[in-house]
Amino acid sequence: MNYDKIDKKARKILQENDRGLYTVPTKGLYPYQWNWDSAFAAWGFSSFNVRRAWAELETLFTGQWDNGMVPHIVFHKQAIGYFPGPDVWNLERVPHTSGITQPPIAATMARAVYEADKHYGRVHMELLFGRLVSWHRWFMKNRIEDGMVVITHPWESGRDNAIDWDDALANVDGSNVGEYHRRDTDHVDPSMRPKKEDYDKYLALVQFSRDAGYDEKVIKSDGPFRVGDVGMTFLFLRACRDLLHIAVELDHEVDEIEGWIKILKKGVERHWNEDRGHYDSVDVRTGQFTNSLSCASFLCWYAGIKDDRMLTHYDRIMQTVDFGIPSNDPDDPHFNHLRYWRGPVWGMFNSLIGIGLAETGHTVHAERLRKRTQKLIAEHGFYEYFSPLDGAPAGGTHFTWTAAIWLTWAS
Ligand code: 9WN
Image (tube, rainbow, N blue to C red; front, side):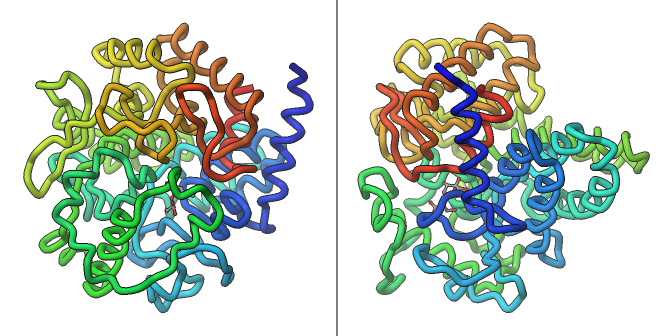
């Protein structure tokens, strides 16, 4: 296979999705700047245009709120084709944003961009550092319970309709949200997207937060959905470690960040579901585990946790499917190989799991995952996600983060 051609195609996708100073995840389906997609985009750009990579991160932080929160979408410019848009979130600030956050991987990707060219990146890293610290401080102040990162909306996890959230969503009433027109199913086969009953609940949660004036105290005391997301905890722990590394490099205070890492390591222990023998999310309203083994549980290594207990599950799952790692355990009765976060394999998730495996000494596992992901993308294209059973492409096409991880990790 001629990888030069595919490399070129990957760069072309980033350029096509480039809106000047930010990148859309893909044309049509997602016409705005998404938080963690942009962090992946910056990583991708860093392989051939470091300058553009910094612009991506800096534009994302123009959406940062005064309290430090970095929203999951920044609506720089009105676009059709996506629901819910800025009018639904109803926030006064400019640029318009959504009112929830997303996995905080920006510090991790900023470190990667910085390391691609330290000479050029030094001043950019200096400027972004304080903003990253204030976002992380927002998490520590508002979203940590028992050391776990709590999400208040499934969209915050980045794994919207994961099986993990099913039980917790039973507490959300979606029956009074009124009429609305979804746009995602205009672009993608509805059988590959969340169901209507899920969307009703997503909207009910948006309306709840909006009516609460996005007040974190009210959301914590009265919010109908609050889950300690194992993926968020691992990614945030990783990001805090990267932030610490940056702080040392730039000669900044480290005590506060070291304190965060200590707390999050305790959270990792709380995520261990002894009965099922794997890391799991926790419904903090009830204290119950979600009893769901998803791709997020395998981020333990990326978070720097040296834990061979997860390898047994990893090996079993990889033997069951052709292309791992699926977003949910195929042995789960709710597994669906094409429905979004309930089974499909996501290249960007593989890159994080693979890096974690390599860093913790599981080099054979890591290399196998990288090679399988390479084959998946080379043979099927730069799709949003794929069936783990046969690699069939699904969701959006010409996808930014799939192109980004091809350039930085998979190829
Ligand atoms: C809601 C953009 C985003 C990703 C998420 C993915 C999906 C949005 C949606 O697309 O979520 O934020 O409308 O489905 O689940 O991880 O950031 O690619």
